[in-house]
Length: 195
Image (cartoon, rainbow, N blue to C red):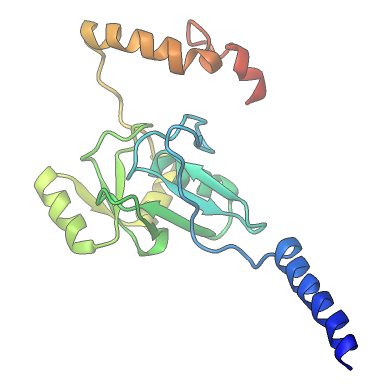
């Protein structure tokens, strides 16, 4: 009997390990964003600024990351389905996520990476206070999705660069952007073939 237990126990342990390794439980919640490495699933820009983006998990469990809440909403609308698992970064500066359906959205106070100007808060009171202080607007997810459907959803037009800003950006563009965008910004950089 003892010999039988000595054979059965290692087999059971091996079976449990195999199940855990080859059949992991379903993922839930967002993945941490690797700032400076992860790219936005919509615009393909590197995600570099905390507190402005979000994530979607599709039906297969695949996570898509976004650098701007506007990019997340465009991707969501393009998918043409009910809101999947989705989270937005809380603008509180703590690099935490809030479920999209629970977030309070504020528009118009922050220059976001793609110019949509939408930030999210877990705390509605903080969102209202921020909107009041910054002369911005608290907006509902439904209102933003309606704008997308009607074609009225657009990024804010960027102000022209000053000469000093353009000079400072030239080296940054050459180092960080030209591989995809090309030296003249025509999208013909050597890495563009892989996007």
